[in-house]
Amino acid sequence: MSEFTHLNNNNEPAIVDIGSKKITNRKAVAQAVISIPKNVLDALQRDDFKTKKGSVFQIAIIAGIMGAKKTSELIPLCHPIGLDNCNVHIELNDSNEIVIECTASIEAKTGVEMEALTGASVAALTIYDMCKALSHDILIREIKLIEKTGGKNDFKRP
Image 1 (tube, rainbow, N blue to C red):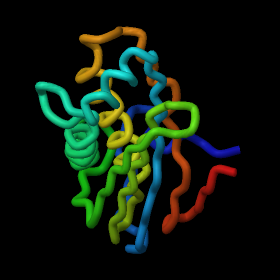
Image 2: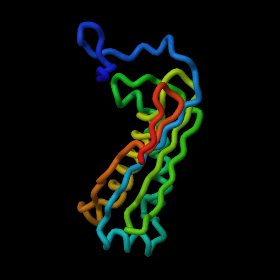
Image 3: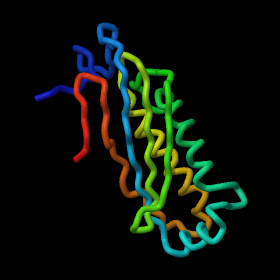
Image 4: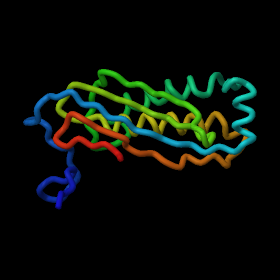
């Protein structure tokens, strides 16, 4: 059984020591799914996803990238890293849900799954913020890691 990694020998919170880890290419993909009421979707589609505040998806993409870049400022024991790349893609699926995918990558000693998860989360929160005037019945119902590569253990959600 694995142990929690963010505790020192005295069971106190600690940042993970990555000093002896090898630098590798690391990538993570995270996803958030938002369910929105029909009246909100209709209004977004009628106005080509633009509001008085600007394009909902374009602003959410920028917010997601900014969130990924600031992950270590939000999550206390997360290593501060400079991302090599971060992309946020947003689309409607066949169920008229908004699907956000954030991909982060870096060549480093530590992974970027927290950055990808934060990017997807911040993009989802931005969409909520921009649409809440029409309804508070917006549900960010899923935030999950899709895959990560380049560390000790790769992961791919089936």
